[in-house]
Image 1 (tube, rainbow, N blue to C red):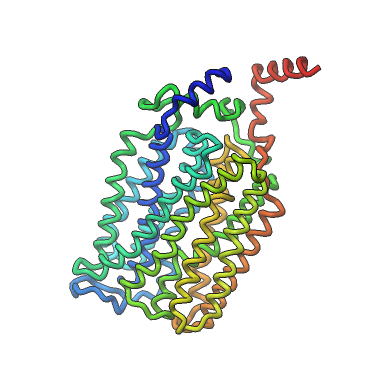
Image 2 (cartoon, rainbow, N blue to C red):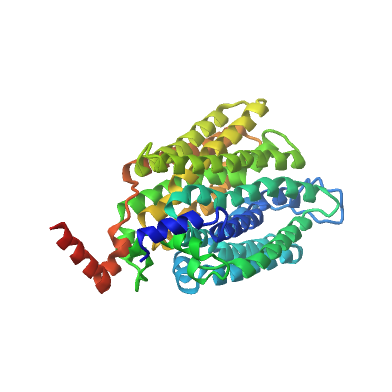
Length: 473
């Protein structure tokens, strides 16, 4: 271990923008590319089906009655790798896993038009499921990078930065997809575009990414000491196994999972169903639809940074305990969107401006997630956060599968405002459930099982504990 003087000296020399920022920036662009691939389909499928506004009449359109099943098919594959992906990342490293995953995603995008031409909606479902399978590594990988590269005092802000790429992806994906689909190239060009930007991202990833500060060729010694000395020494000892029973019976982890499940249910409405609502109820054309669908995520991108900065400032200046800070941000991220969806459900169809405002406020409040649950995995388990995220992601993927299917069952007429009201009120109820679950069960204390192996297997640790007790006496 480094002495206190070494740590202070290193902290003074550490670059304000160093290797840790490069790693998080790579994750920023990863989430940008991945979410562009994932959610541009919400606009593209409008152009792929009947009454498309494309100016190229050689581009085929389809009379699909299973659009919501196509939308949910991504998550059929996404749910499969979740639990074991966290284990795989711990074993093989983030760099290898993501290199393979994104190559599969890029090729799937590029071949989508050909597969749809040949096999229709069923071919589309198969490719979307394959993309979901490959993207199952992204969320646990991001948390693994944050856990190994970012000191706790910087995690809320840099975590928000890494995740905000997903918001930028959503912001640009929808208007760009709307533009490409309405242009002479038609909807196939949106899939070629997604595949191309994915391959562009892979180049700097392969050249610059590193799993930890210890195997980064470009990091300075001062920054390496600054990062590694900020972690609990217990975190640096490798664990031989995973305490599955302790994880699965942990109440703080249950609180995170239930809250994430409820908020994911509501967020899914914004991500996949709002373009249909904007088209069928608010009566906007596809280009305007793409812009309006993106506006809530512009607000989320900007406020995500603000929430992350404020959360770090509150804790670092000791204005509030970390636990209270996390719960406050969870309440904002869940109860705010609930109020917006309830309001939206009762607004008349003619209130287009107010409806759009509610959509923007919905995502504005939801962005408080970055100061709340988003970082809580690393609070309770720095060692196993990738596995915790994988488990929660697997459970929450149920929302991503069920919500589009439920919408298809409930909304038999997409122009019926009353049917949309049912969906919005259900989502609001899930947000309220999410807030209650975390407020009662959430915690920021590092759980004993996070370093249980260390206490049992590390002679050095046992000796240090004995020495500590003797000095105390």
